Image (tube, rainbow, N blue to C red; front, side, top):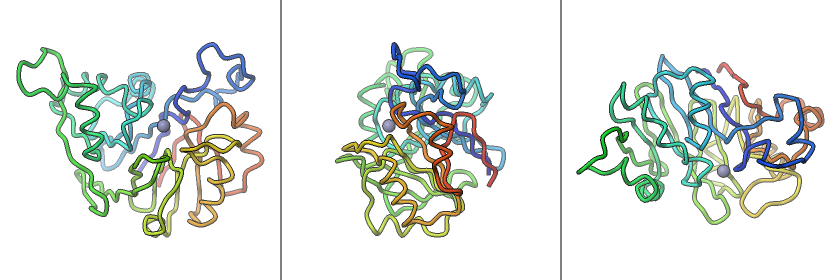
Length: 254
Ligand SMILES: [Zn+2]
């Protein structure tokens, strides 16, 4: 399994439009962060988690020319706003399989009604094949086995996903003991760490480090990062040996 971090930034991305914050002005490419998403390549198939406003650019940058499924964590715009750009995949492949909580599907239907319409469809509109993700129900996409992990983003339910000994969790603020138990024996954990200051719906750095301490994965990569966390190089240097900041373009072989 090969993982590519397509984006590692929080909702506005880094740099923020119009910002003169030093991190937004940084020339280190690792301080440029698109909206969070990862690509999983497994047995010749491509799976993408979340489809934010940078989706088109991410598909072009990493030359993703077929898409076997899109998995959604939740409905916030930084995770869903790029859905229209599945069009090139749809034209070549037909309906694109989408995996999401039924609440997320209902939200997507409101925002992208033309994609979900079954009658009087606009020519050129893409279409999706919906698969509802239910907590505690493991599922398989082609040969990829997926375990949903139920977490809370403030008051909003969000799905993280475990694939063998790799887990991807974003937009977490709290997680129950029962869900933590699904994260044993991980080789790699990806989890959000927004900034130093507390936030009502995201782990800050301290909370993310405490979570890693409990879960004890072999390696951890932080994502969904705000410019307020600081320069990549400075924060990375302060982290324990087996904990890293992810950056756009980082690839892991598992
Ligand atoms: Zn988010």
